[in-house]
Length: 432
Image: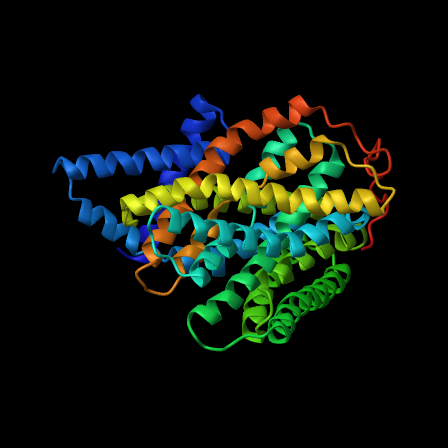
């Protein structure tokens, strides 16, 4: 199958699944698309077992798609940029303390807690899993999916302060989690013997370097956009920013995800207010919302199709089921501890429902599966991939379908300091 044929098949399946979900199921798009895709894959497996179709042929088609490459070095850059465009910088600044702690220390803590409990659980069921491999699982399951939860938050009409916390943390923790994962992977593969100092330097180079690159490229693009008034060229500049910026980050060995998030925040705030005419803003929002919708649909269709090539064993299923409560517990701790510390050391007041909402709203998605598929070949790889898949499917379907109801039932009050009554008016005069 050629690249174009594979792309055409994915788009057709995504379009049909989107129609079925919008017309009949009316679930959140991420949930509906995954359920439809997963159901189709299970039907294909059943038909293969009954010798109605060739399961090997169906699996071979899916295997032609490099999920890791498509997600980590393709979709992720566009999805993160599209999400960052709509993050209010002023609200982000006022929420910087909880967001920064949860996106850094929270990710590291979740990695360690999940990995350790997963290692103990594996030993409990009689599966000999080395501790570094358990930590790898903790790192790849730590990042939350900003795309999967934002639409649900908006439907639930959550306060903007809560939406900013979840969106900001999710956008930044993807980049931090990838860095943590790569650091542990270096140890597993035996390329180095890391010390605390070397790990700290690596994290700083990746995270700070990515943020600095994104800031620089974002402002360069902003000044270019400010010098003209042509929405088609300005849209092309944002595309160049995403693709070229991510490729440059990879070449410079800094965090690509963090770079595009920071660049997206610059364009979505500074450039939107000072460098765009009204028509450019309208076209920018429409274009990137369309890109976000199409790629989001394709991503969750791909997640559902991946079940065709996963090697499932009883041990892997048991570990996957065990990993669900472990992941939820680690997520709750990684949210509860930072917010509790902030409550003790700051005058900032957090609603009691915030911890439960943020803990349950930490949905896992495509990046976790992509990281799992990037694991080196070993006797533990297929087990971790299966466990990751089980956790992601549970997270998207169960947490995704119940998250909106939880937000509505908690009745989280708006934060008077952080939730503006009315959005600030747009500038009347274009900078052009």
